[in-house]
Image 1 (tube, rainbow, N blue to C red):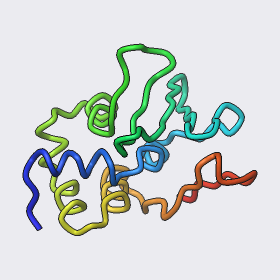
Image 2 (cartoon, rainbow, N blue to C red):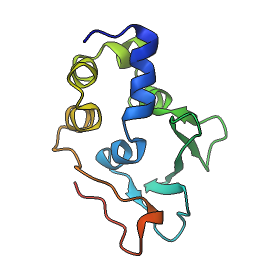
Image 3 (spheres, rainbow, N blue to C red):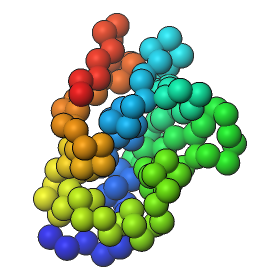
Length: 132
């Protein structure tokens, strides 16, 4: 299935769990500071909050830099120094979208490691798990 550029970017924003992707890049969930509907993640001095908007997009913002916010696309552009074209055209992204294995394929290829199969948000119960 071949998607046009707009549809492809929409799939990246809605089907790839930004929390899971951030974990694959070394971020850790801060259970103490996470709350219903929002997950706080840290990596070194970087601290971000991730949630899912009403339109289904996973979005983030940095608590350290007001200019650092957006969707998975913005996250990739800033954290991996990629252009929009590079994000869209990277072979592993296109393969993940066309095959339907969005998060697992993207995370596995971007991180060079097996993808997390599940992530339980902070609202799911007392035991917050993120398996890598």
